[in-house]
Structures are given as C-alpha cells and as structure tokens.
Image 1 (cartoon, rainbow, N blue to C red):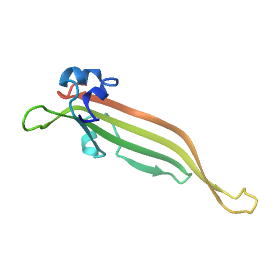
Image 2 (cartoon, one colour; image 1 turned 135 degrees about the vertical axis):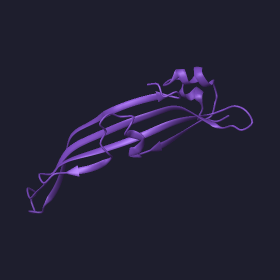
Image 3 (cartoon, rainbow, N blue to C red; image 1 turned 90 degrees about the vertical axis):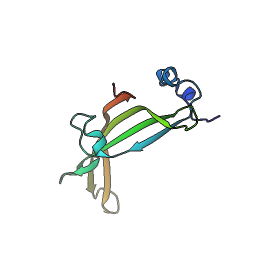
Image 4 (cartoon, rainbow, N blue to C red; image 1 turned 180 degrees about the vertical axis):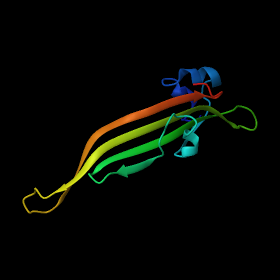
Length: 128
C-alpha cells in the first residue's frame, strides 16, 4: 500500500476521498512557470527580487502545486485532481553601517512583512 494516498489527504481535503475513493496513490508536482499563473491569479507579478537604491527590497515567489491521483485499472494513468496557485511576498530593508566596536561595516537585514498575497485552488473541472 502506498504511503502517499488519498486517505492521508482526508484531513485537509475530504472531498478528494469522496471523489476518487480511499487508498488511491497520489503524487504532486510543483512549478514556478509564470505562464501557468498569468491566467489563474489576477495581476500576479513574476517570481523575482527587486531592490531600490535605499535598500528596500521585495521578493515575490509564485508556486503552482498540482495533485495527481492514480486511476484504477490496467493502465494506471494519473488524473489531475486539484491545482493550487499561490503567490508569496516578503518585504524588508538592507542597510550597512559602522556601529560596531571595531569600525567594521555591518550588513543588516530587517524584515518588514511577509504575506500570502494570493491563493486559489481549482478542482479537476477547473472550478474554484
């Protein structure tokens, strides 16, 4: 019996067990391809890092996670059961100063915010 199966997902996604049955093998694949996001998340910026001349930075991470469930039968093909699209944003500031005892320059990174900017999940029929 596979350890990654629909029964282990029942706590988070009970409807997956109802749709596909218990003990069905599952798999996930991850992608950071911007082309997958552009039509699923509104106004999403590409994954990347930006910093201005004052040391303010912004890091955007987009990720797509697809849940696959193995079909029963001879061919044991995989069905795309769920697709999740998430965008994470972190902001902060980087500074350098000479306030230590030896007069050496110190690089300091201050975190200002971290957020899950957008999250959308779709079923196998593309319904949210």
